[in-house]
Length: 264
Length: 356
Image (cartoon, rainbow over all chains, first blue to last red; front, side, top):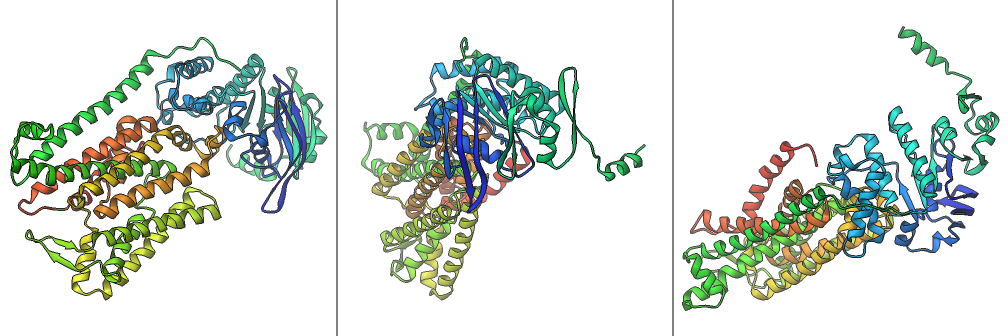
């Protein structure tokens, strides 16, 4: 077991955001956290690496309580890819090298540089390694952020909507890359997502939040149309195409038809 | 997870090498500029003579006096002040994630000006005399310095207190600073309105930042503060790099973002306060130099901060020498020149590149 959360309870300004969250993630497992906007998906991610301090409960990573660790120790166990990415005038190599921060005492060592090079090759970024990150495309930048989290040499990877701002091809590429890294290195990953189809296709397990609580939690194959309907308030059908589940909303908004007709 | 078989790309080594070479070239330019600055002035001293005097070799008593008592302290003050103001500005721009971030944006200099004005008016630090050259002197400089320093530090303490209350976000800190700056400007105007003409002259005179003011002892205080605080900033280079990538990412990398931001802001303010309390207000160095060197070495603080130290020292030394000479026999305070120079340089940087 890599990650184990127990009765996680988070409140902000006296208002309960998350209640009694329990789940666990094994080596090689990718867990998708789903749920409507504002339900607390990102908050839950930030509770796991103690950016937010839960009011009650425990977060165990390989048996050790994260909430009692100094931040630098947490960062050697948990890599975090935030949703909002800001770019500075740094080369790809230096931006990834930043991921060694929790391991750097005073100066970067030769070993730090070697690990960075290896990660850059692993993610096929070697041709961009001396380009500045403010000149990269969205997909490349997301890869840099993932590489940065990987050189922390974490056991657990947290990703906040890693594909939300990417085009179709980059979405697929990033998800395949994550799947490969998780399988090869047998690390665990937790990611928040909006795209149900992408989640059902690549994740091993799914945790759906509703009103701050776990609504349903299980293997991806156990997720039913009724569960999705109950969480999002919209009837859906799940079809299987080429063996992969495809979630199709049943009701289209009337306005969509009007727009479609006005542009023949 | 582990990564094996990585090598350090030769290209990356060359890239780092180029940045290091830039730093070394700044050191060389600074050394040359120092010798030239000491040689130039009302009495021209040949460069060789300057080097000999500095090395303690053969010299005349007159030249020795000019160099050790007048030219060298002023040149070194310019270097130290330029280095300190620029590194404080560079750290602040990163900590506040704002290209306009500097101790001046946070009202530190306004508070210092108010402190000096208050000292001149109320505490009696402002009985002035005119010396032979016609420059105005404040008779009780220590009181004025202390008062300016206290008010600058009080300002940063208020910003830290409010940041603790409302969260140490760049927005909270910048807005608080702007509000305090406006408040102290109003206070200074109030004092100036009721001041007599002698006091008014002293208040205005104080704000002209002038590197000729510092004695060897004061230079020592400024140098020690600059050295200590710049070293602290260097040691935090990776923290500032991480904050540049966003608060969330930095926290994910184990950086205590709020603490780094508060401590950094406090130290940058102290450094600025020490320098401007001794020399008066020297604007734009803290703002412009970090932007200039960032164009060359990029945003990596491992190189940006040392480059700001060296670049700031060089810029203010050259400016100070130019200010001394350009309207001879009148000696212009360097702050007038930097203020004139700052605006066009800054506009040029904005127009030249939309990229950071």
